[in-house]
Image (spheres, rainbow, N blue to C red):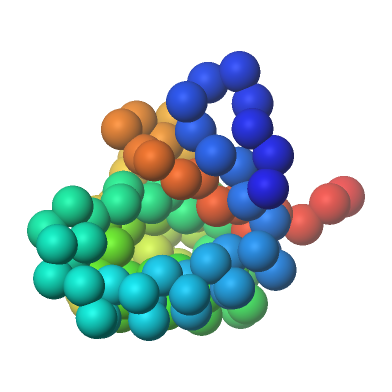
Length: 104
């Protein structure tokens, strides 16, 4: 995990998987944690990223998603994620920002 100059935590996909599983287990046993939901922004929804975002959403996190291809956000939005119109909007108010972007 790295920290930038803003208040957001930037995490890579490998860390996001571990983080999601650990917090899901913790939250399912602690009702107080469920009331103070962590706000997660997910930028980039490729095959692996979309699966991880679904895991985060199922775990009960407040999830906002953004992808250049709008149709890739739809399955998550139908399950309760918020759809952002830009990456910047997705990160507004987020406690954690997860990016699933390919390097070109």
